Length: 470
Image 1 (cartoon, rainbow, N blue to C red):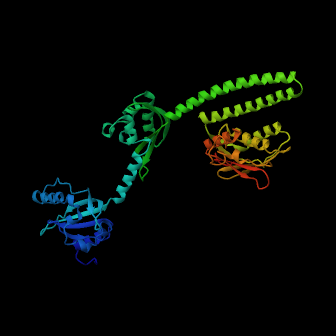
Image 2 (image 1 turned 90 degrees about the vertical axis):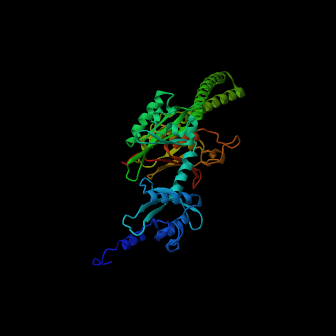
Image 3 (image 1 turned 90 degrees about the horizontal axis):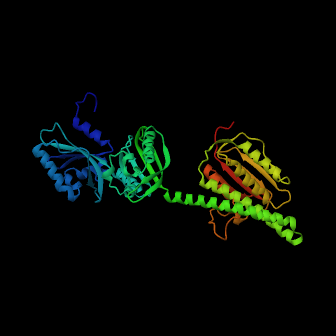
């Protein structure tokens, strides 16, 4: 249409709706379809020409046709403007017979005199409904307590796990501030953490803590967090509270701590007593008996060292008072090497040139190097062990430790360097490498092993970077 041609509203309308991705149908007062745009085929499978002249009721499931016909008839008869013609979700009938969820907005043409016309805009909700079903499946089928809050902390949704734990119905708690729900009524600390968590998350922060919550039949210790949820503009729209029941885990942890303290205390005292008696015998006996006494003393020393390693392992597993921060790698490594060189004067530990690297670690980093290097020295089975270190300035930082020994036997690798299950017959004999792996796991680091290209073992410690190189 050129600028000089008269304006044709019908032609403009057809051109406009012909290029939209949403389906458009126009019907008359008898529900006869008088226009359909091309997009209707993508939604309902019909070519536009197939629909023009047919009744709109053919696109409606049979169970709903009477209600639709009655609604249009009442509107035509009464002109009732309160009938909701806009934004209605309903099922439409596809050409192949299946139902398609659509959002329909129906408006009457304001300038029709000969006959009354209505145009409906059809939006396919299939993908949206699928996403909703997927979300509901995840939301309600997790063992974790999960909810959804307004930014002010008002609860707008809770999953089935949380509701069941509290013996609650959804309608009983929706609209209630999170900290006023029964879950947080057992103690003031829980309520305060919930209140502060909402405030912090509403300002873009994140809270994570362990709290005790109250259920219908029991209380529970949960790993609790609240985080913000933003829209595509970055605006905080909701808050997401989550809780993982760790009651059994905390009880096991407490039992292990008691057992660890009891065994360590008793074992240390008994080993001290046995060592004292054996040393006395060593001074008094001669010949074969002296050899036996010396063997007892040596065994006591080994068991004492093992007990100390077990303490470190238990501390690393049961304690959580370690704050990771950027740590200069070289001073820690050089100090450990110097100490071991004094302890094993016949060994040779070869360090590379100093490097200025920071890794994310804590005070236990020295233990990692101590255990791996000492393991390499003690198991080389040679008179003069040689251990070489390499440092790769990569991300993560890698420290390679290579020795000239026979390599690590398969049984000693079980559960540390591979995923093989630990059994009574298949397991390592020491605790040092277990301790190293546990600490590195806390750091988000790794411990790996390969046979050395020459002869020996090559262990690699990988650590996350903890700051800028400098």
